[in-house]
Image 1: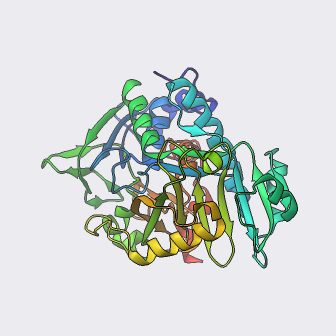
Image 2: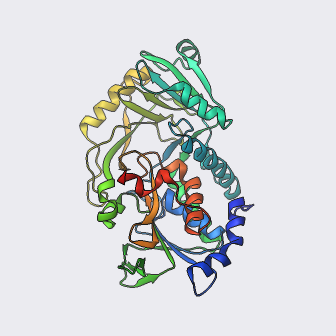
Image 3: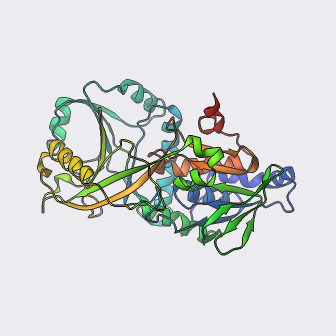
Length: 403
């Protein structure tokens, strides 16, 4: 089902395409953009470009939300609590687009379970500053002290938890399904999607003329956007190699007791536990068990060749943690596990900028473990940049690494 209404930015961009084409000296007013990577960043960027009037070809080596992708898996937390104002704004916009899309496509991609951020004694997080940023944008939230938490969530062991922030309007997203839904909408609305492994073409005279496809053919376009997650580092070793670290991350799903809904979505929100270590999780939803993960950066990881088996150390750590913080789950069986990756930048901010040697080539990545939720807003921003209606956001520019 197509979107019921066009976004404002889409209308503005569509009206400017004739000028854009003339500026670039294109052979026709409708620019052709090739987007490589159909994850949260690439899929949403392709969809926004299409709705803005561009001709768009979207490519992915294994398909949207595939098992090796950073955007794969069952669920992702969406939250407003951030240390930078730009992310609070982007999450607010993304949440609007997630709601809009779930309704228009008749696919429940967003589950509003709320998110509870628990802060341990001595944490460096400035709770008042986070709350202030959210208040400025009229984002609903509530500060809870220890005793209030104990009354509301008796199934949580609150040892060492000093305070918490609760966001009632957020929750978790169905990641793999969302990637597929975005590509389905893209195709239904006239986009060209292909499953193909792609390599960058040669850069000459400040431009990339084409990309090399796995079937031996080449694809030409006016603009190229590489949104390839952890594969970006090896695709562009000189431009991105120094700025990206790919880390191995483990997540676990534990079985909850039969006929005990205390650990299901509804009884518990999605949550984070912030101290010397940071754990996060999603209560039992989609009949997949109680999901938890350690947010610490893991060891180096090759997204193409590394075996995706969780470690015994990781299992024990997760089991010990869940038994401590959620006593009713002590000894709970591990029913599923997954190994994925973070594509980390030194400062944790994304990369969304032109290739330093190719003005028609864009590099989009560096999700750093928190990018999925922001895909809709980031895609909207990048589409505007590619179509000449917005300058590169300094927070995500490559130039910041040179300071």
